[in-house]
Length: 333
Length: 136
Image (cartoon, rainbow over all chains, first blue to last red; front, side):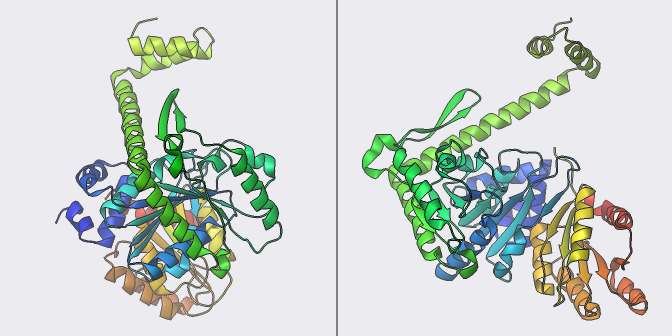
């Protein structure tokens, strides 16, 4: 039996091992991804991001429980935690908050280390989500690293992005800054039993009222990636709802799940679902072109020549731009 | 290609709530460049085996201070085998009486560590034990 057919028939050990191969970028992993790709495109990818300590993992735990109790959909969770920049090690602790999901064969939780990536996800998160998608998990939660203000990669990957806030995490000026709040399809105030919840909600609501519909496009290497054009269909404009939850009391999750369903229907009806998918796949192809070209370049250049040119940069004889031009043209200096 | 990282599950089964040792070991393994998945307190053997399966770990570290190791450890080993994960190495830490050590080792426990163990020894033993599975 091939890896692909094992995955498609629900072999959990084969799935787990393939996830490792994909995470490590091995040839076997890549080959399996190629043959699984036609089976992808079915799942609803739900991103969960927010500052450390706002309760992302507990929220995912409760949402997954809700989906398993109320629907027959299978749930996968990819939980990303940071890799140490000094040792390369990582402590992945998101499972601690997800113990309620243990024992359900239709829930699969996988922890991932960010491995040097700075956007809140790991380099292979998108590929791991594709594997879960092909394996028949209809709901895929992707929990980012506890994010600061600019870790917005999740919005490129997920269909629906939840930004989790908690009372006492900043004022109305934080709320109108660019970055993480902009990417929210749904704003969640978790720990809503804590003092200050009114202020947090007011600040977020104020931010939404100040905003007007903008084309959602990502600046990416100087090129605009248009992902979302709500202004073109103003009658079906999506305004992010603000919802309150208390994860430790399981409160507010019916409303949250309903908002996620409404967002999926909105994406389907407005055509944004396929627009987002295309933007994501286009970006993936572009990233792979960059990686492949960089690898090909390195394979084609002599290490000593590279070091020699680099040495001239170190001595300030060449600017980095000039060095790249010389290296790419293969001209002797 | 990314280098293959050693993945270790650190788990705390049973009812005792003293997880300081487990955390110290988890931190030491992290600082040695491994990816450590920490499960938290009061895990059942079924939960530990399930987590090991989903995370595709190379090793499982179990911390027990309650004296229930002769019941819990064989059960974890049995469940890992049932899931097809017989290659996963098992390490045990906590309060383990000397007379139980030979039996546990015979069951397949790769290393047993009591209070006062140097974390360097644990890191070295884990690295050596999982060398084979890294090249698979």
